[in-house]
Length: 175
Image (cartoon, rainbow, N blue to C red; front, top):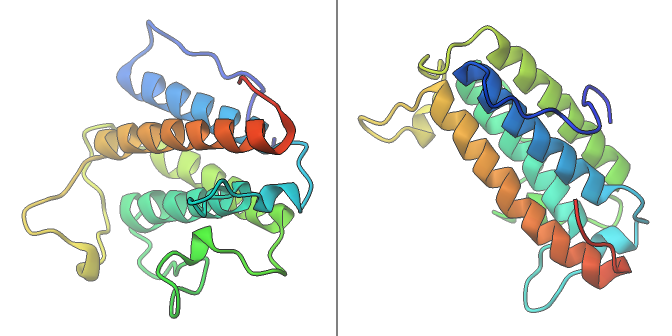
């Protein structure tokens, strides 16, 4: 796990920025551990009627990290999407046969590392630098705190999805 401690320490007496970062890193590490040890065939398993798969979730979280931290928090409006959404608005969740877990995981780890760098110098109360016009909600400009809490929620939810997929795929349970 590049850039991640195996079990990030949650620091109950730390300042706000450190607490937010430690919880986010904790859920990132749980997410990545739940992906470890699966074959390319296993990462494509779904539980009907849902079309969620491990591979789709990894791709989704790479896209979500990129959107919230690279484009919005750091203000890099030139950073495009990782996946081509022209013919499928859920393309991150719908990998093609040639898409691999290794590629998706590399993209996710790259975006996680960028996010750490982008938020290291930011105060939780700092407003996002870039909100692309097509995604702007009039009068709504969240701060870094909101983004961090949202990402903790996003990872926690998808760790639950991974729990179910792993249990069906290979019987693995737990963090």
